[in-house]
Length: 210
Image (cartoon, rainbow, N blue to C red; front, top):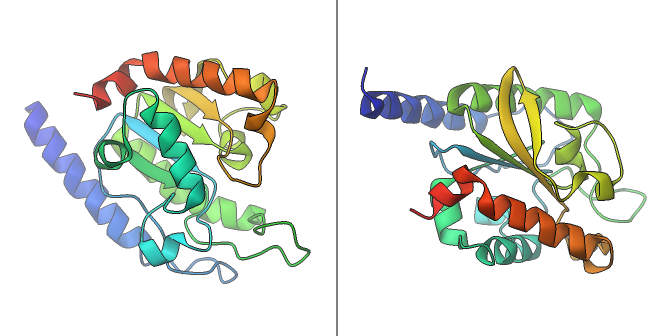
């Protein structure tokens, strides 16, 4: 079987997967629509936490202020937003907006049952795409792949992980939310710069530029 045939078959499969994902109604507390990146066959798989209140309106992940900051980080290492969206698969721990935290202080943290329900979609994506690089953005996303630890111990280096039986490089990034101060002060400033340098040198990231 040629690489072209394999690519076409994978694209067909991931497109069908995404169509099913967009129809998901598994979690009654989640606020639809389901938000997903494009059906892209890529060695780069980015995982965010969950859509915010604006992403559903735009129909794509990281479409608001946090996205602007995230893509400015990526632009600093050679890949602009349009290129990234076209060439990398964008996923999330949960694919619908969880709603606001009734106690105040931002968005509601998804429940374990909601995370478990959405993990089936992530499992299928990783099985289909077999990415060589996973980018985990934010504490919730990082926790799906790495043991719990302070961000200062996770952001910066290249990790090797096994995700649903598949081995890949992983780079952890802090969430780019304006409400976060972690990446605006030390050691976050230095560790974010280290993580971006590590990401920029990773072969799958380099391939996005071609």
